[in-house]
Length: 190
Image (cartoon, helix red, strand yellow):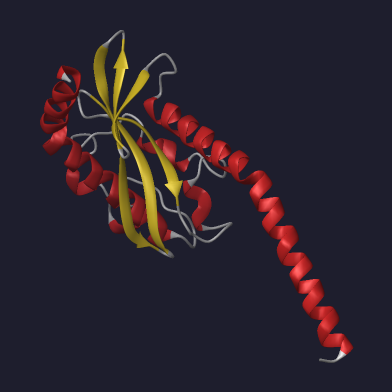
C-alpha cells in the first residue's frame, strides 16, 4: 500500500469514528428535540393551549377540555406533492370544523413549495375554521382550478396536494368520528 493511500485510509477511519461519536453523544438530544417539536405542532393544531391531548394511537389524538371531548387531531397524508409525500396534522372540532393544520413532514422545494410551513408562510392558516360545508366540497381546490384556496407561484402542485389532503381528511373525520368516539369509550373502560 502506498503512503498516500494509507494516510487517506487512516483519515477516513478517523472521520468515521468522529462522526459516529458525535452522533452517539447527540442522539438523545435529537430525539427529544423532535418530540418537543411534534408536541408544539399538535398544540398549534388544537388552537387552545388549555386543551389536553389524549393519544388514541400514534396518529390519532382526542382533544379534551375540562374532561370533555372537543375534537380530534389526526395525521393525513398525500403522495401528490411535487416531490412526493406530504404528511399533515389535521385538527377538527366536534362540528367537523378545522382547528388547525400543520405540516408534519415534506420534501418540497425550499423557497417555493416549503410555503406550506408556518415558519415560511401563513398560507396553511387559511384552513382554520373551514369545513366541508364552508366552502362547499366542490370549492376545495386551488383558485387556478376554480376553487377557493390560493396557490403559490411555481408551486401549484404542492398547494393542490395539500388542499386535497385536507379535504380528504375532513371527509375521513366526518365518516369516522363515531368510530373514534367508540374507540375512545373502550379505552376509558380499560
